[in-house]
Amino acid sequence: MSDVITGVLAVLLGLLLCFRGSGALRILLAIWGAFIGFGVGAVAVTQLTGQEYLGTVAGWAAAIVGALVLAALAYLFYAVAVVLGFGAMGFVLGQTVAAAVGAEEPWVLTAAGVVGGVVLAVIAIATNLPELVLVVISAFAGASITIAGLMLLLDMRDVESLVRADVSLADHPAWYLGYLVLAVVGIVVQLRRSRRGQRGTVRQSWAASSR
Image (cartoon, rainbow, N blue to C red; front, side, top):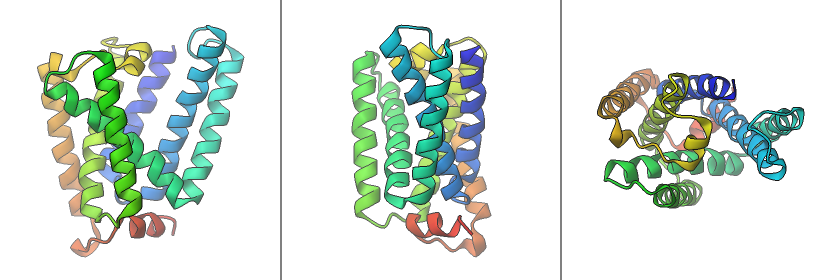
């Protein structure tokens, strides 16, 4: 049951991020913060108690509290939103790139994700990233999350394998092709939605999306 819930949430968030990443940045980063907080809270209880993921009332309570806290922080504070959003997107992209070049060991994929997350978060905070960069990053990250969610729903992976990153898209050529196609379509859709073709910075997109 937890795989189905997580899969549905991942697909919905992934599609929103892929096709609306730059147009509703503040709301999406708040949703992303909620998604991360939900997972962190649930995993924390699982690690502390040894119970099944989301298998107890305490697990659900911690997941909901984590979701609410990180969603609020991501919505209210730009720096928090950037760290959560770009850090998580960098983590996803780092793992995806590592898998694409043939990495298979879970620790290698995790390390690549951490490096990607840290680098992207630092760059986003230290510079005024153009919105075009956000469009590309959000489309690829959203496509990756969508595919992972679909694989969860089709029982091709489970939450544990998702956390351990021991399932690579490189092992599933059709899914990998679908990921690339979805990312490209997401980029095209987001660029077409941009107002009068004008591109600002990530900070400006975040501020404007609250209006």
